[in-house]
Image 1: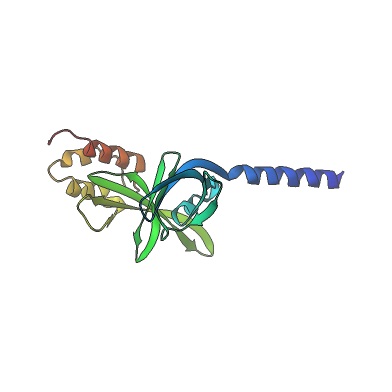
Image 2: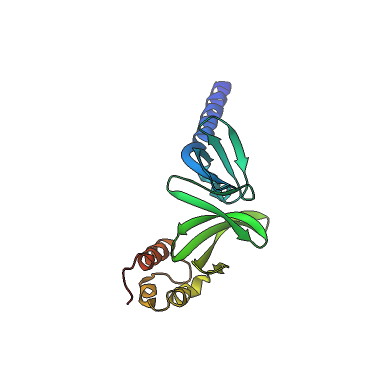
Length: 183
């Protein structure tokens, strides 16, 4: 009986492990700028992997893993990632908003007392800027006001305090990017 229960436990555990990883319809943009359609392999329990590599299956069935130095971008399920410089090394950034003002998210590993965790870092940039600005979470509204000079009233709609409110930041920047006239 113990052996039977052990086998059932192993089977159930294996099934749940396999159900976590999935292929979703997606794309990659190769280094020549061509968009190739296929499927992106994702593991929802390891979101941080999306920022360092992508496993892609072309429609022809060819499967390959790509790092940011080999492709320009990839995406799946309305999530888009682009390869950008991070301290001299290319990383995938999640594109939260793209436009006159763009907002990106990057995940990185944090080790604290031998425990590994992951934290997000946000970056903002204007279309004409060559360099992204690191978001200071407790000063994000002020950064938005500076970026939105001439229409800084949009920044006042941002609802966040010491931690960045990603959803509110996305809404405010989209609203600013989609404005029809000046304030």
